[in-house]
Image 1 (cartoon, rainbow, N blue to C red):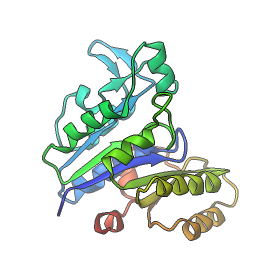
Image 2: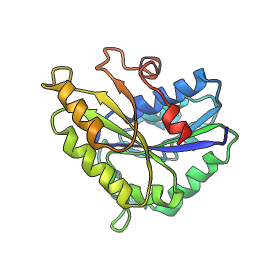
Image 3: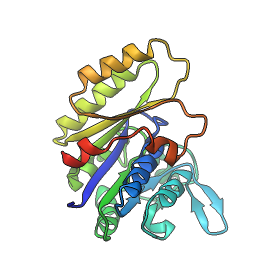
Image 4: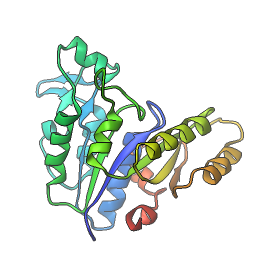
Length: 229
């Protein structure tokens, strides 16, 4: 199988990008594939004796088969849980697409069958006054897997995000429904609407999980359509 590369985008912050990314990595491992992942920029990191650490990046490290140093998996880390471009301004640092492309290319060159690049927030998260995280994906020119956080309002968020991705000239390889509101009204009707209006294949429907980990997520994923697309 030729190496597959996917960018994991979300309809919003806390849509479940890391859960789905980790589940995809776990599912690929179960299929006997070698995997590698990167979260190029992360806010909301904790100070540790080893330096800043982000829980999302640590989840990717736990789920992928390759062994990489933390700094390669999460090369840009900010402590405050705020928008990356604001965190960068406060830290007097500059975020740029070119810099992130370099980090991603370094990981993508590693021997593997699958590369997962996890975004931050939604599709149009700013990096600086001129660039957004979407510009990174455009430069990398890789397909996108969209994580839809299923809650009230998710249909609008999902359709707008798919429209933006496709308008940017990129392919939506598939989408994953992640139920984040266990008491959402009309859940089945919302899922039916999403399936009928999103042209890309649904790669899985993750129910609300009391234990949201890579193995539980992987049980609800089918990557066939994305891998064959």
